[in-house]
Amino acid sequence: MPSNPFAPPVHVPLPSELADKPALMAWLGLSQPELNKIRWYSRRMYHHFNIAKRSGSTRQITAPDKRLKYLQRKILPLLDQLYRVRHPVHGFVSGKSVKTNAESHLRRRYLLNIDIKNFFSTITQNRVVGLLESIGVSSEVAEVIGDVCCMDGRLPQGAPTSPVISNMVCFRLDRELMAFAKKARCIYTRYADDISLSSHQPMSIVFDGIVPSAGNLPRESLGAEIKNIFAKNGFELNEAKCHYADKHSRKRVTGITTNEILNVDRRYVRNLRSILYSVEKDGLASAQSKFSALGFSGDLWLHLRGKLEWIRIIKGPTDPVVRALIVRHNACFPTRAITVIPTEEEKRDRACWITENKNGQGTLFFLKGIGLITAAHCVDGLSTVEVFHPSKHSNTFSATVTHIDSHRDLVVLSHSVPSTEYFELTGSTCVVGAGDAIVAMGYPSWGYGDPLNVRPGVVSALTVKSGVGLIEVNQKLSPGMSGGPLLDATGQVIGIIHKGGPTEPRDFAVHIDVLRDWISAIVP
Image (cartoon, rainbow, N blue to C red; front, side, top):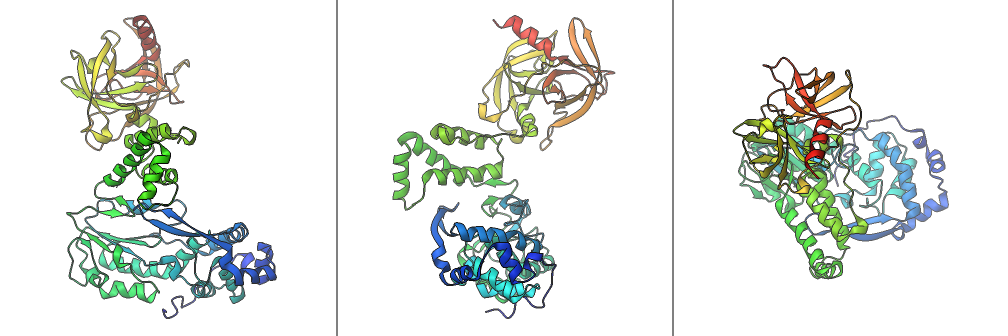
C-alpha cells in the first residue's frame, strides 16, 4: 500500500449536503437500516455484463441496481463540486473526450502510451474514504459515500460515481506527472487509465537515457522516476499496454491515429465494413451466429453501432466514409436508422468544391433540384473538367458540361461524385433588396490546407446588364470565387458569383431567378 497518498490535507469548500452525516442521509432519503443493508449486501445489488471494446475484446461492467444507482446519482453532483479538473485530464470530464485527448498529441514525433493495470479495482474503499477525509469531509460522511459507491471494498466499473472518484484519486498522480512532463518537455494527458506522453524530441529522460526501439516495451524500460510516481500513488503499470512510437512509426492515442490528422485506423474501418457486408449478404441472424462463433457473446447490432459512433466522433458526421457507412447501416437496419443532422457550416463546406483547368481556378457548388453549378467562364471551351473537395484534393471526380450559357455566365454539369461526398444548398425564393445581409463563399487562390472562404457583406443594388439580372455586393469577390454561391441571411442561395476582384470596380453575382428561368426554358 502507498504511504498516505493524500497528505498533506487540502481542504475545499464543502456542499451543505456533506456538512455531516444527517444532512447527507436526508439529501439521499437514506435510512440507517438501508445503509446497513447496502454495507452488508452490496454485491447482491450489482449485476455484471460484458461490452465490446474497440480492440475486439470485452470489458466487464459492474452496474448497480435501480435504487443504488439513484443514490449514486444523488451523490455525483456533490462529488463534482469537490473535484478540480486538471488540464491534462480528458476522461469523464464535461466538454472533453477521447478526441480532445488525442488532439493534444497531434503531429508530435515521439509518443509513449502507458496503461494502469486494473484501474478501478485498484481503488479500494479505504482509499476513497481517505481521499474524502483529506479534503475536509468528516469520517462519518466519507464512510457513507464509500459504502454507497463501492462494492466489496473496491470501486466498481459501471457505477455513476466511479469516474469522478477515480479522477479525484488520481489528483496527486496527475500533479506529479504534469511536473515530470514539464521537466521532460513533454505533453501529458490522461483518459481514465490511459496515459500518454509526447514530444518533438526523443524522450530520454523517460527511459533514463536509454531510448528503446519503437513498439511494445516492458515496464523495466521506463526510468525509475516515472515508475516511482505510479508506485507511490498506489498504481501498477500494465506491461501489455506499454508502447513507444518514434518519428518513423504510426502513433495512436486512445485508438486514434495522430500522425498528421486525427483519424481512425484503416483496419478498424475494414472490420466495420466486413461486418456490414456479412449482414447485407447473409442477414442479421446468420451474421450474429458467425460473430458468436468467433467468441463474441454480445448483440452484433450494438457492437456495430458502437463502432460506427466511434468513427463518427473522430471523423465527423459529414465525412464521406462515415456517411457511406451510415447509408449501409440504415439499409441493413431501417427501423434503427441513424439520422445525421449536419451543422450549417458543415453543409456549406461539403457543398462547395473546386475545379482547376486551363481557365484557372473556380468554385462549384451543389444546388438542390438542379445539380452541380458554376460560372460559365470557369469551364469555357471545355466539355469535361475535374472537380475535387479541398478536404482530399487528390481525390478528383469527372464532371461534364451539360448546359452552358456564356451570356448568363452559367453552367450546369453532370458528375460522378457519390452522393455521400457532398451536401446540397437550397435556392432562395425570398425577394432580395438593397441593404440585405449576404454571404459570399468560394476558394480564392486556393492552396492546400486553405478552408472555405466566407465573406459577409450586404447587397449594394439590384441591376440588369444585357438582359441578365445581377446582384451587386459591397464586399470584394476575389479570383477563384467565381461560380461560388451567394447566400442570404437564412443560408439559402440567392446568386452565383459572376465577376469581381481587385481589377474590377464593382462585384456581381447572377440572380438565382436568372438560373431558374434559364433551366426551366431548356429542360422540359
